[in-house]
Length: 629
Ligand code: ADP
Ligand code: MG
Image (cartoon, rainbow, N blue to C red):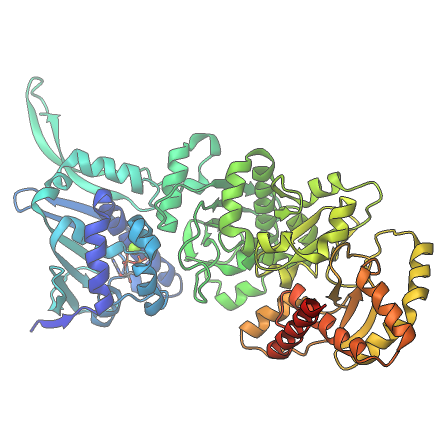
């Protein structure tokens, strides 16, 4: 008895979306079904490495396409791993990947609504059949089992499932074609779609074709014969030689493995020979997949051992900060039955990883130097992910840093560290940066005053991750990379003059410090202020104020180190305060103003005043005083 089952709500939604929005790419349904058939054979081929009996003596792998124009029916048949009832319910009745909630969210997002092709990334695969068919029937028998199943749906919100006869192992997907999809029953159309999308499929994709052949012994006569023809060349793209592969073939293969509808930005195809041998075909996408920041994002290229797929994503083959890279690695050295656990500590895998990382970074460098526009759009998509490498890949820190781009006080646009160094003033020794939310806010920061005055360029760190990774950079090309909101900045001011000032204001500084003893570590003269009256700075090893804000926003409590209050020795205020201090060192004005200065400094660094209402009260008192003269 057939059981009728409701599709999960999200499947229903997905089906509607696929059928309505991928419409202009309708032909891909065939690619998807052939690719599933090929995956199913991959799986069985892999399983039968350890259990030969599973292949049941039939390892004549094949995918057959059977058009039936009369009945408007198209069948895609394979002798792969097959499905039992549980498999079919799970694989064809739910969306089993990427966390359903997030998936639905992404599906309803503005981006996907505007660029429907993006849903291709979800691996809508099987459901694309409904673009071409009113009804889809799947008859399948799983390897090693003797009962088959029949799954059927016409995409109306339900499907049926029941036991069924299936003489041979594998899966038949049977499509009752829509009126307007009859073209996919024509020989030449099928031929060209297979050639276009599935040429590199490793198994023969065959079809029975009619051929006119001469009748033996009768020269003039011909007869029609049915012959099974293989439509694809079956050559794994990555194993072919580079100059034989067209750009289009590279791009199609990328789309096949990534579910992306956009061409990749770059491909990297190379072979390593020697003690370790492998071939890699990697791609740098143009667009980030929707789920790249999700926890269960599948990172890493597919791993093949001598053309047998071992894993569709092997994250041990590339560092996580390159997780946007897609592709295939084929090694002839690894054992076919290697397990995930073994992979993690495999020396060969380490060597492959090292080489892939090197190649990808080289490619990025090349792109940066030779195609600025392309690099910029790459950087906009993946820059923050790449930056993680500063933190996690100590040995390549400098190489990665060289790939980064920053906006700066120099209004000419974005820069990288090398050109920053070229523009450094002759007397400038360090690379300076400031971090915080937006470029426009940073540009007005009081911390920049002396730097601007001296013509020293300051880099703006506006990505959230900057506060985590940039302080760890330390040096670039032997130049200190320094936050201008931390430590004592010495911009080579006349030290004699400075000493003089220091002596002059010593008493006042001491008095202010006493007033703020519970709030700041020290009060000192600033080398970085030109206009503003004061600012707060951290010690060299303290966390950046921006970092503290981020961590607090994430709900973490952060122990706040006391700051140092720096005052601008050239500001008129301190001349006046000094006079007052010398006549009345206990004046309440000194204590009031000390607190005001502290609050002003808090505001200038982007924080809240300590107690906004007390602060506002003090300010309004001052305004009254000023008006009363
Ligand atoms: P994906 O291929 O990305 O997993 P699909 O929607 O294309 O997503 O297929 C969903 C699932 O259905 C597959 O993962 C597989 O488990 C199952 N499936 C589809 N076609 C076949 C087939 N021909 N043989 C065995 N299983 C299949
Ligand atoms: Mg698929």
